[in-house]
Length: 87
Image (cartoon, rainbow, N blue to C red; front, side, top):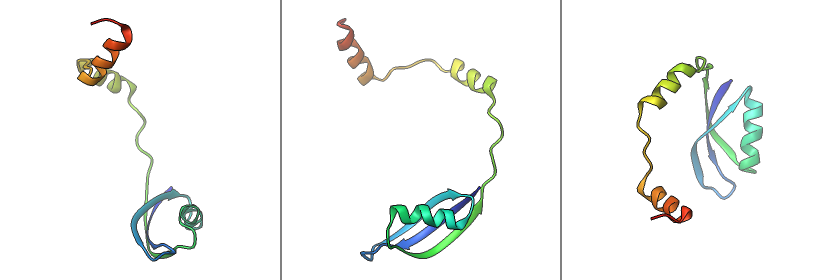
């Protein structure tokens, strides 16, 4: 996959920078861009090859989750308290 970074000018003349679209080819990226911004003018286009990340280490994720204490924010506690009827 390739990441395409577009800088465009909309049909009303407003400039929009840093629109990133992942696609297999530039034509596909431009098609997706024009679905969002009809009649836009492409000012610049940068490309960057993106490789796949390494496979997910399930044991590492479980270890991270189990090492951290479970905390519930005060807002969530108050919502849960009133929904359960307890005080």
